[in-house]
Length: 88
Image (cartoon, rainbow, N blue to C red):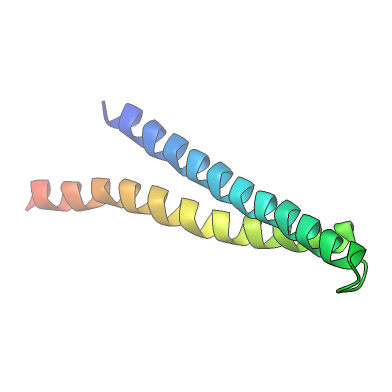
């Protein structure tokens, strides 16, 4: 049962990572679209998709990792807390 719970916490961490990464990448695509429209109506410089999406991917990887480690770590940390209270 414990092994299943550990696997489920790790799967949840992976799902959180994927969700946050996707959120940042989709925000980057939306930002590029906005910058492109602004350029086409003469209100800004021509955007570089590589720069915009590269920044979105970097930010996404950093924050997705942060939240995945936080969620999975908190879940897995409960096992250590449970073990201490049982042994005392």
